[in-house]
Length: 320
Length: 300
Image (cartoon, rainbow over all chains, first blue to last red; front, side, top):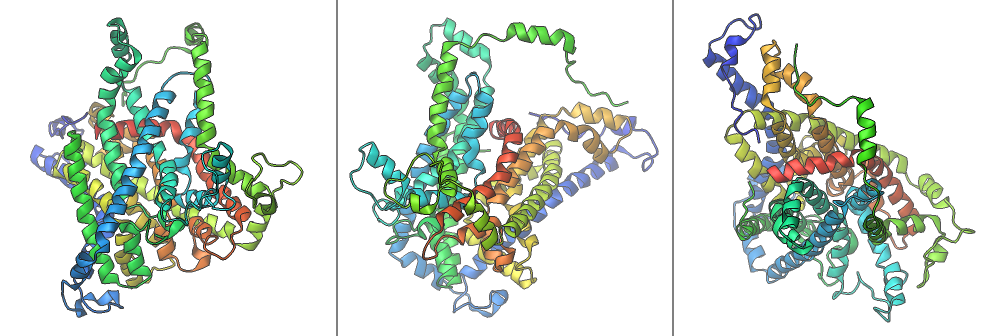
């Protein structure tokens, strides 16, 4: 960590003169400060213009009544809580939240398990590892839409290869219409999402594993630790913090994921896969209820924030 | 002159024999590990295999409840690729995607290098704000942001303009990549720039000539991350680019689905084509990616 590398005004004295003449340490420090903020300006501009401002517009939109057609002139519409009343009194809201949670946990648990197992495997030395590693991480580089398309074909009720494979090994007797059946649709949208997200865990965990000093294992072996004990007392403590961070970051991402569910099911059948992210989209671009959609988005933001804080506390590591 | 303290690499002549002596023979356990990873890859990469399979075998042979698991050699062909290229502006879509991806990656690279350097070298409140911004901006549903973003770009007449997609993608990558770059700059000792600045370099020149070369793994990570994100974007491009000629490849691919009959061979052929650029990038930059994620996630 370079946390202690403060700006050192002392080098002003040793600077060669010429560039702007001689300066007192104080002017130098002020110039440094301007420089520091100057370099941060592009970041702040991008985030401010395309994140902070849209949030402001969304919040503004969520408080406007009436059928909002011209979004450019929000000021003309009265301020009201009607959208929030509509969202909160809708009995479907709880179901949407529940589905978002089921989806998030349903993706995180298997993705983390696969990611961890793979990281432990890829951290060992064996011939061909250099080819295995990029291949194992490859799903991360495949566009989400392509992932969805491939899985919608593989999960097809009549011609899907997944049905064929499951039938061949005797796990199912008859084809299942995975995406069209409301009891299996959630599982069917979780599978491709897991496929897309496990590499992120692998990357983070391999990286963390490589940072563990080798002597720790040697010491553990001398103390007679078996491989499980080595994992528990040496490996896992080193993985905890990066794992927690990766889970929280991915979890927040999955909670509002859209690119897998929407192309696969559009939120159906019978709303079985309608998470908050899908509902927000539907309200805006199918029913053109922009105000309701925005209110729903603000509610989602608060739920995600609350979950983030809860996860942070539960993990006890603190995401800094 | 600027002196960069680095470990002195041993001379080639001396190093080679030592390495040869050091490399232990492959044990039986390691062959087992290879076999195990082969089996794991077989399962994990099956979807990719099936896409290739679907793109090569005529649909009528796959539209059965017991499709062949190995491509039948006599009927497999690449006709689906030709048909897709002829019937849809795939080249155009790929080109649009390339522009969006390169634009996003380059702008993200510049913005987050400057931002990351500033956050690492100057300790201010901004650092904490940035960490929070990262998580906060990831919390926002893209589907929520897209309405205001649409409004903003519509009001300045930038719908069907690739720049709007580039800018939104930059906004999506920059919080995370700035954070990554900060931890990479943390890894470069300040003394190096100090020495350069004593020698008369300005800060910006010290950054460009001394720090930047040492940041190569970080730049590669940021570049890869931004490329993967921008190439895979669907929501932003779909909303901001209503005109089919301006679509990116992901929007184009999505348009195959949802019609009455899906041309699976064509769809998978387009899917494979869309994967190729990312695969090439991934194979070259993957080693940096692991390193980059390490410093990004472990240090926080």
